[in-house]
Image (cartoon, rainbow, N blue to C red; front, top):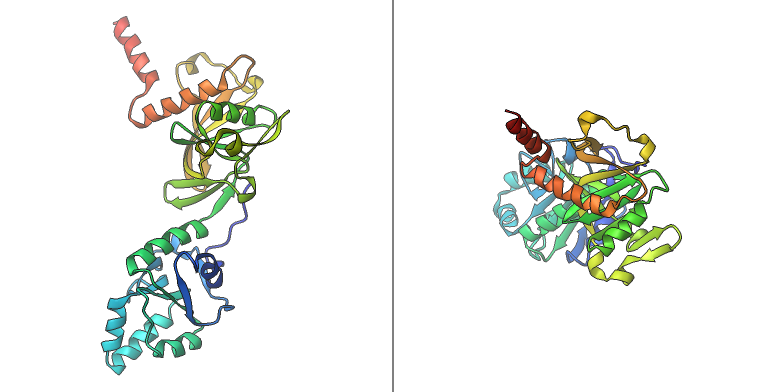
Length: 319
């Protein structure tokens, strides 16, 4: 199932929502502007090099969140009227969602008139410029990233983010419970949410309503944190591997494939994720197989391929 996404040119997060969500942690103060304005943050910076997400005021490359610190404000205060008017025009007439003033400073009073004229909020913070930029960039990257919800169980297995997928009734939750009992960690059951936060990085989290819970047939809903402790739960992880459980009848054995891993790629939010098809059959220890698949994946990432190594050894013995 795919989550609803917002077009790049549409508002994905209003400035008022950002202020409400981060007011305490960023020590924000709404200095000027209409809190109910339609201005907001879009995903434009994820698809366009013409505008950035967060940064210092730049005459060449504008940002959706313009940051003004002590250096920038001193420059504005020392500028003569003609230069000041030109700077104000360039600052307030851009496609910015808000102007942030850092270091506990207040902008010149002339900013208030421009803020009201162009319906551009000005927000002050006691944080330093660098810290404010880092905090806003992290928050906005998460908030504006396109998201997708998949059906499955998302876990951390041997420090690797692994999504266990498959048809209903194949035992995904039972497998997850077995992995938790072996020391691995649950992130999300049933509906993990994924967001692309970098060109090749997809982060997986759990919806708030599902956190800590795992539904197992015959046992009902289990609180994994209460049963196994805090160490059995992980809040988020980058997804690196998908394990696709398949019924035995869907597996068509081929002699030429027995030596090689049945791996393919699954496109998730534009990123190709290695996917392993794992047949389910009575007597198979799926938890051990998943652990082995993850360890083999780590070896493969480090440049080692067991199948190729074995084939080369066979060739040497045949010579």
